[in-house]
Amino acid sequence: MSVTRSGARPAAVVLAACVGLGLVGSPAVADPQEAFAVRSLPQDVANAVELTGVNRHLIALQRIAEQNGGTRADGEPGYDASIDYVVGRLRAAGYDVSTPEFDYELFVASTERLAVAGESVDLEALEFTPSTAEGGLTAPLAVLPAGSELGCAPEDYAGVDAEGSVLLIRRGECDFALKARLASEAGAAAALIANNVDGALSGTLGDPSLATIPTGGVTRADGDALWSQAGADVELELIAGFETRTSRNVIAQTRTGRTDNVVVAGAHLDSVYAGINDNGTGSAALLETAVQLGGAPDVDNAVRFAWWGAEELGLHGSTQYVRSLDFEQQLDIALYLNFDMIGSPNAGYFVLDGDGSEGLSAPGPYGSAQIEQAFVDYFAEGGIETEGADFSGRSDYAEFIAVGIPSGGLFTGAEGLKTEEQAEKWGGVAGEAYDPNYHFPADDLGNVDRVALERNAKAVAYVTTAYGESTETVNGVPPRAKRAEIRATTRVASASAHRADLVAS
Image (cartoon, rainbow, N blue to C red; front, side, top):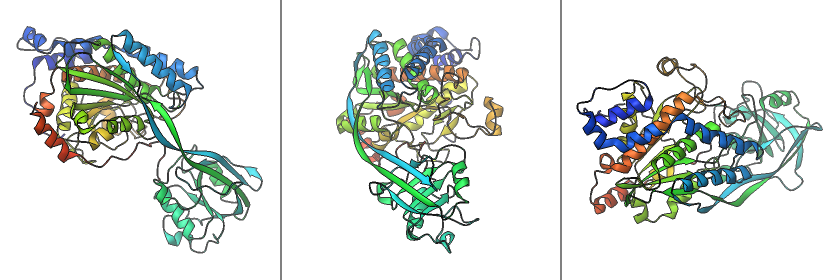
C-alpha cells in the first residue's frame, strides 16, 4: 500500500492481533495491564470467536441447503430457513431482531427452448434479452467463418448470409451486447453465443437499452457441434421479462452505544447453491461475532449487524436498505464493514482498497483508507501481508459508498487466479482460482480453508468491536454539521450491481 503507515499503535492492538491470529507467543508490550484496560473488549471478543463456533454455523447452513433442494438462494425455502437460523441465534444472544422486507425487479426467463435439425440443445437466456414471439421462430443457422467467430467487428460478418438467421458467435474479446448488435445489423433474427470454457454460459447484455435481438447462450461443447451445421433448421423460443419479488434482510443492533454514530457490519446471506464459502463464511463469522459481543456490550457506539438478501441477484437487499434511510439516518452511520467470501479454499488475504493505492478503482469515501489500515495493521502484526481488493461494485458496500459512507472489509478471492508471488507468501497453488467452486454446486463444507477462515473471523471480530469502542480514526468525531458537509460532497452515483455469475463477455 502507498498510504503512509502509522508509526505507533496501541499495545493492545498488537497483542490482540498476534493472539487472535494464533501466530506468535507473548508479544512485547510496554505495559500489558494498561493495554488490556484500554482495548480489552475487542481482544476478548476476537479471542472468543473461534473456528469451532464459526464452523458450527457453516454446518447449519449446509444442512439447510441439503434440506431445501441444495440451495439457499434468495426466493427459495433455503433462504427463509437461513434467516430463521440467524434470527434464532441472535435472539438467544440478547438482540432485538428485525427482518425488513424489500421489493426488487428480477429479469426472469420463463421459456428457453432451442432445437437444431430436430435435436434439442440446452439454452440459457442472456439477461435483458428481448423475447421471441410466443411459439418462437424457425430460421436457418448461420455461423461466422474461422478467424472471425468472435464477432466483435463489422468485418467479421462480411460474406455471411445472416439475413433472417439464427447466428452463432463465439464468446470472447468483446461484450455480449456488441456481438448481438452487430449480428442484428448483419440481418440476423437472433443470436446464439457459444461459451469458450466448459459449462453453461450465463451472461448479461448489460442493460435493457442495449438489447437488440433475442440472444441466448450455449455450452462450448454444443457450440463446437453446431459450428459444422450451418444451414440447419433452428427452432428458438425465448420468453423473458421482469417480475417483482419480495425478500428480507436481517438487522440486529446492540442495545448499548450511541445511535448517532453507528458501526454497521454486513454480509450477504443468500447464495448460489449451498454457498458455504460464498457467503456462508462471511455470514457465519459475522454471526459468531454478534453472539460473542452480545446484545448489550460496553461500547460507545452501537453496532448494527446486517445479513443482506438478494445480493447474488444484484445487491438488492443492501441497496434497498440504504435507500430506505433518509439523509439524517444515513448520517447516523459512522462506517460500513463488508465481509464476503472469507474462507476461499486457495485463499488470498485481501483488504478492500479504501485509499485507492492499488490503482484499480477510485478511493472510497473519506475514512475508508483508515478502515483499510485497521485491517492491514491487524494482519501485519500477526505476520500476514495483505493486498488490496478494489471497490469493484461486486458486493454490498456499493450503495454505502455511493452515499458517501466510509467502507471497508475483507475478501479471500473468487474466480481470479493466484499468482506465484501470492502462493509464495500465502501458500496455496499458483495459477488456480482462489475459489475454483465459486458459484458451483461444490461450494460446500469441503470448499473452505479453515485456517484462513479463522484468521479472518478474528479480524472481523476485533475490528468491528474496536470501532464499537471508537471511530475516531475514521471520522475524527467531528461536529455533526461537518460530517453532513463531508457526506453531502462525497455522494456518488451507485456502483454497478454484482452479477459476477453473469459476465458480460
